[in-house]
Image (cartoon, rainbow, N blue to C red; front, top):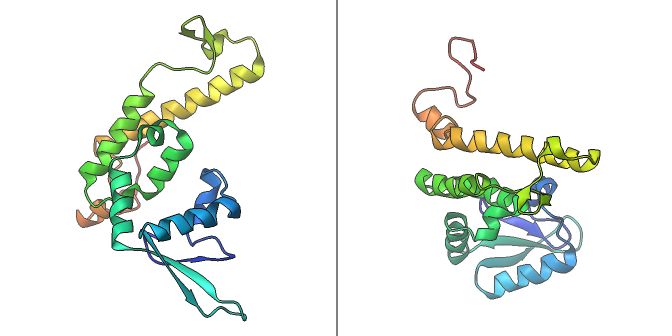
Length: 189
């Protein structure tokens, strides 16, 4: 809806289907009351349009106030939107809507600070148990996977914050290939 109107009433709003693999599923019993609350708060506009069959379809659009609130929530996400991976992925999916790269980077820096804090799934007293010290193979698997994911995310965050993972639109404005291809035909590791 941030990019334009989305369909409701029987069809998930455009863009939500593609994102659903990275977020918790939303049931119709939760979605439609939430939409009604957003309409009631003046953040969404709902209008009926003729459908392909006899039934009308509901089209949802952000209002000016809705866009302002979306940008505020992206610019100033709640702590749990930074610490919960699923909620953070939702923020990340829409972060490019913030027009100021400094605002985008402030959110990424918060996530990086969170990831750099010592943490673990399992503890021996007050010390997190490392994968190499875990006897249970499945718990060790959890730790190995979580560690690899965290290392990859921290590396991407550092690269992006340093300017190496810049917005492809910025690369295009500098004359660089926005896909990251080397103009000489080679690529660096």
